[in-house]
Length: 130
Image (cartoon, rainbow, N blue to C red; front, side):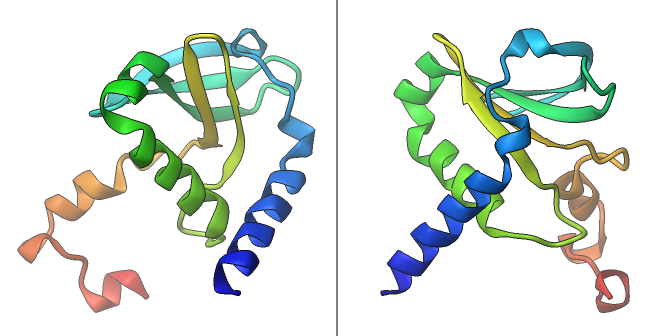
């Protein structure tokens, strides 16, 4: 029953993304690379039709097949299931023949995990998280 509710919430979130669905990589102007991870790279991009900036994670499908299908699916599921002002929103996801794309909020403050690693005990204090 719990899984049914989770699946329904995920479908609902996917329906909410409709205004940005049916996008292709060609709809975006790349601005700069923001970072690289184990299974993909993140770029600052601008959507041509509204000039809004987003972070776009690009994952090569071959890399997914070799080492990250489950990780990418989990990341997508988590991003679709959370709604919090301090976490980036997954606005759209789409794919081309060779790549998978996640379109998320661009957070100009940088990578939250890098900032966390710089904290004493590698954790944010309670006062920071409030």
